[in-house]
Image (cartoon, rainbow, N blue to C red):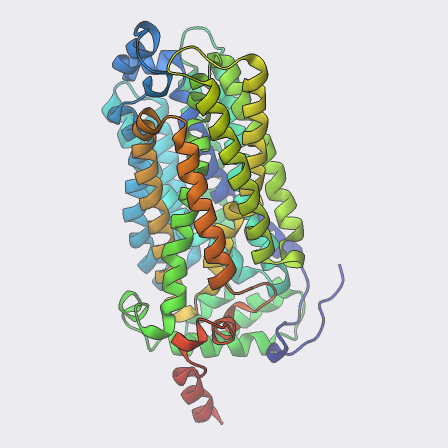
Length: 511
């Protein structure tokens, strides 16, 4: 591996190379994404399994099997059923705010460890559930785990990686999400065939496998230099770790930036109050807007309810689960493609490509379903396969744009003094909007019918315009120098101003 260019921090890069330690650390941390993805995929699969529905949601099962008059779009409309899926996200929302002080005061590693342990407990409870209350309690514990992991893992990866590798490394988290979804779909496809009707228990309990990897990894992983400096008065320990992860002894430029950022951050006692100040307005807007837009792409509709959606258009139980496997495979592959090109093409280019791709496919799917799928019966096999192909194109568009970049961009834009608080807001907003979409989708599908795709397609137009006009390019910008992109942006510079008073004062004192 070639040694990184010896460029001073003012030039936008630091010394170092991609070391094995950084690679292994980021891969281990990215299993937090596998946990999140596995949960997204597994819940939609088990809720389409007839033995699971019969045991925990008998009214839905009866409506699906015996009510011949009910609309295709309304068979699965049950608030109790959606509570099973969405209870995780309310727990995740609350726990992401609890994770913020833990991440800030004790470091990224403890939050990752708590996330892994909570997910282990939740997967055990879900696999052993004997009633719906036990099932939902398990989901709540999973939500705690996902809340802590999603708050800390993207920060951990962004702080460990060099600026020129940060995009690809951070997309490792979304690659983990894709692998988790794919694994869940494959497992659901297999466990659905188990005679005796208990295959869903294996699906829920196997979440313990990635949770175990994350928990063990959290014990073995090094803490980030940013966190060590923030929580210690001795910068020598951080310097040692920095030299190990960069593979060079010449790390002074990066260390100086980290120390300066830490000194500023220590003057901030209430980061959640600080983040609403005018100088942090762009970051706050992105912390709210990006997770909101990520959810109204409609992707979690596909991820949560893909098997249910495929059953809606007339596929059988096994075929619907197999279709979900196909879409999961496409999404995972596209995410890996994104990781390869994000630091070359940039964030905005991928946002634009993905936005156009998602809009065209959603409108096309909506037209097909509006014309050909009525309240009863199903699509012909040919049109069902066409819808599947279009959904795959849509999933690919999301998987190399809003999927990974919805996690990458927020994790790299916050200055250290508000970074933990900012990431907590991002994660909490993601959970809030995910909960709203998950809780309302089946009712929306029943009432909007095929119009649901036009609804989400309209939002894709709005978010694509938002990115084009308001999001600056962040590729290759060191994380501790990210404030420059807002000062140079044609809109945001009128709000944040051209001078950071706190940093200017600090530099004048040090002169």
